[in-house]
Length: 188
Length: 299
Image 1 (cartoon, rainbow over the protein chains, first blue to last red):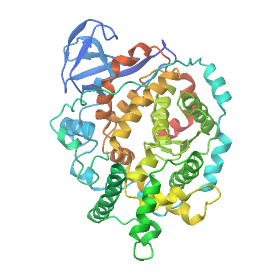
Image 2: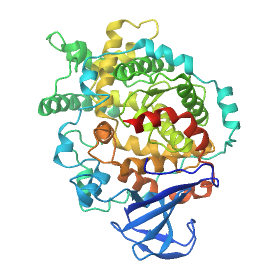
Image 3: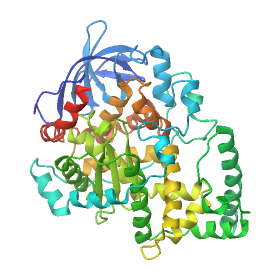
Image 4: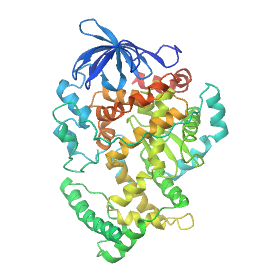
């Protein structure tokens, strides 16, 4: 396990082992884990930082020059830059934004491993296993009681309205590749 | 009606496209076009199109469930349930609580942990939700699990798989779905549904459906009282894995990249920040999933 979780800390606070991380998009380094907290500096895509602690939607990070602050979880990618074997940072970023690792990633568009193609083609279905699921089912009351143990509190929240502007394009130069899949257009 | 005509036209186009796609990819799915040409018989275009039109009607809940059972049987045929009743029960309790905060709280929601190293999660029509052991072992808290399950719940709420059936030129499958009722559950019809779902799970849903499931899933997990960022944290875990890892192959083939999904969620970040103090619930999650994590570490 790369991330070490210490048992119940503060609500919503999760300790991680100091871990390298890369900045995925333009973002601000905040003094506190709040949107309206002071901005310490700007983070640029590709910046390497160290992730020290997560709290809610924020990571406390340390920059190369030692500066510490809070960055949005959604602006970071955890992991070493070279972790993806032969691909390096560029290819990794490419994969992150396109979901493919290069030409080889595109070929086996319907190939499945594990829950894999070979098995799927056998058309083996397991009706009895579907029946067996019934024995593990939880009733609504049971679920409520289990939530109460935490306790988890229900709250009213509407779905968010649609954004009017188009989504921000990915930060790397290969953005166009995400929009057209030669085999299954738009299916990724 | 203009719309109806346009829709029928789409079907013709999609049929042709689909045939080319399959040839170009060099794939051979037994029964891809189901019973219609399975025996080498001539396809009755008129009959297919009229079935296809019918297939645009709303599928009622009973049919949805019957189709979902068959889709679930496909997944369970590919990977059995983890033989750990306590673990299955845990995921059902969490999942049912999450599902109670959707617009279809009264569906007979069923959750299952599939015994596979693959990192993935699946939904089937009517309220069947699956997560693989490989993904569950990589999560860190119940809030992350709730985020994943909520994402899958959205596919059920939106009937994304049924719409995929209607969109992807599966005329035979669409007809089978229409024909599938509890009383009329002949093996032949269900086999066609099953083969269709094998294809849909291998191919994946529309990428916008996935973004939508992320976006709504976060709301559902937040309604259920969890820290809203569980799903985003899960996407980060995926992003930090070696992308060449074969356990990720299907997930990456059938979903937008995790970085791209995080990017979409980033736009909504401020909306969820006020709920960032909601609990992660890691204690009982780690206890409930200890056995599969230990097994993963031994490997």
